[in-house]
Structures are given as C-alpha cells and as structure tokens.
Amino acid sequence: MDSFPSNSSSPLELPSSSNGRVSGKSWKTARTATVRSRLPNGVKTKSWAARMEQTKRSLAIKKVEKELKDEKVAEVTREVTLERRRVAEEKHRLEEDKAKACFLMGARKAARIRRKAGRTKKING
Image (cartoon, rainbow, N blue to C red):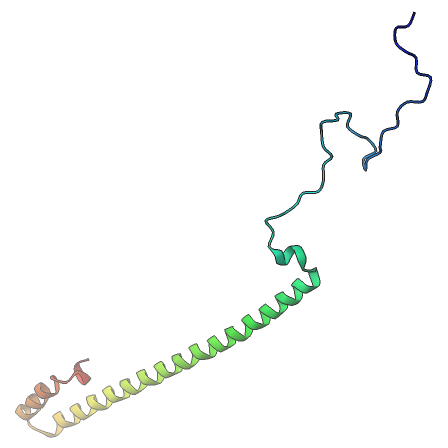
C-alpha cells in the first residue's frame, strides 16, 4: 500500500557546526572569517609588542626632533631680538646727537645739518 519505501534505519547524520546547526541548502558554502587584504603588512605580520616597540621608537625620535627644532627657533628669535635692540639703540643715539647739535649751534647751521641728516636712512627710517 505504501508507495514510499519505509526506512526503518536511523535518520541521516548531519555534520555539526559551531552554532550546532547546518544549513540544508547544499549550494551555500560555509562562511569563513573575512580576509582583510587591505591592511598593511606590518599590521598583518607583526605582533602587538613589536608594533608598540616601533611606536615607542618613533615617538622618541619625534621628541628629539622637536627639541632640536625648538632650540633652533629660540636661537633665531634671540638673534632677531638682539639685532632689533642694536638698531633701536643706534637710532636713539643718532637722535640724541642731533638734539645736542641743534642745542649748541645756530638755527641756520642746525637746519643745514638736519637737511643733510635727512638724506640718511638711519634717522628717517
């Protein structure tokens, strides 16, 4: 009467998976972990400790470079400040000489000296 053959044996064994179940769709492939091919080789191959050591070395190098750069900038700033101070002192000295000369001589001679001094860039800037 039954057109189907009765199978008195046990059901088919399916291989177990990590989740405890297997897809019944035979055309689906088993999923694996993603292969991250775009990562740099240093990240893929090196250990965490090696990468941290490399990071420490690069930070130490950057610190030394920054110190050297700061020293250089400080030296340049100091030289500029000294040069400006020298120029200001020279200008002040010339102004004092001019005032002293005007005080000791006549008006026409002082005007002549003023005109002559005006030709230099030291006083008129």
